[in-house]
Image 1 (cartoon, rainbow, N blue to C red):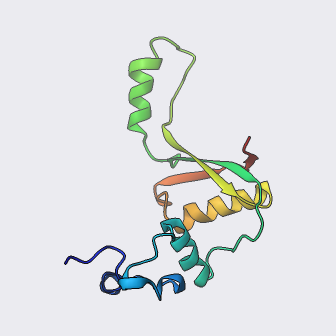
Image 2: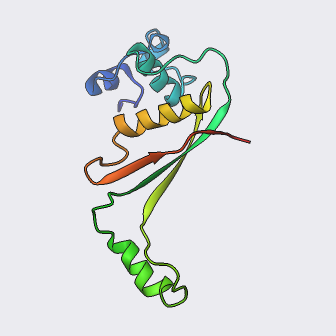
Length: 143
C-alpha cells in the first residue's frame, strides 16, 4: 500500500517536524483536524520566530510597492510611455512600472503591522534588494 502524505514514515523521509498532536494518531496517519496553516504556526512558534497571538487584534491592510531602483532602466515603463501614453497625454513625462502587494495582517497597531510586513519582505526575500526598492506604507484598518 502506498504511503499517504501524512504518514509518519513519509514525514521522516522528508524530515518534517512532528507535531505533538500527531504523535499518537491511529494507524500512523496524521490527525486530519490539524490544518496546514496551524502546522506552520506551531512550527514557527516552537522556533520563536512568530509571536503567539492570545487575543484577536484588528486586521490592518498594508501596501507594499516594489519597483526598480532609480538608477536602473525600466524598459517596460518606457514602452508604455512611448507607445500608449505619450501620443494621447503629452503631459506625462515618464512611467515607472512596479508591483503592488496588499497584505492583511493582524497586529496591535498600524506601526506594528507595517514593521511586520517590512520584516516579512526582508526575511522572505519577496524582493531583490540589489535591484529593487521596497516601500511599505503604514497599515490602515480593514473595513
